[in-house]
Image (tube, rainbow, N blue to C red; front, side):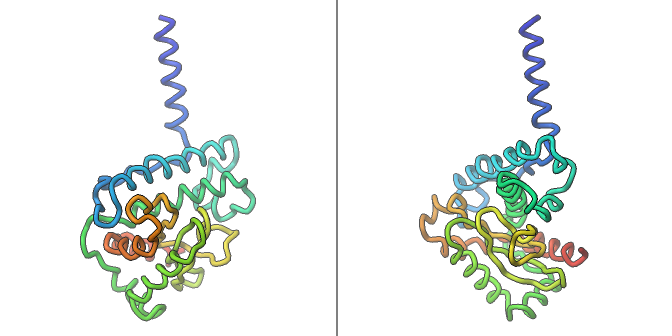
Length: 224
């Protein structure tokens, strides 16, 4: 009976730790091997189940018992200057990866909505020119970080890059806005397949971009 009670207590403790965590990792809507031509299965598995999972778990630990437990991730990041380095790094890591998984798809040949395509053409000249600008931002990011396509407070598109797990939602970054597309240029996102050839990874990833999701995020950003 004592062993049964101990087991039940352990199960309850485990459930409390994971069921009531403020932030959770969303299950992938595709398999690890969905993008073999662009991102190998082992990289996807390690990236999602180890790196991204750790950001989510460590974020929950960092905000445990604080007011940040009650807000959204967007609210937290918008005032990240008042938080610890652990919250900044892991909060950014959680948000960035949750966005990243949604903008990838095994569906072939998705395209920007007419509205997004028009905005891209007006801002950058063409979709290809925009891709080149995002790739340049990612390739030139020293060390680890992200390349972004975002919408500013005036509804205009812009490209930027941020170090580490920072993103345009944060009040500490120079170029602020709502991200609609983010490319991870940490080495753990590509090194097994591409080694030091980051530009090759950036060129390849566009074939698996989920433009339906990016277009939806664009519409949502315009409403803010």
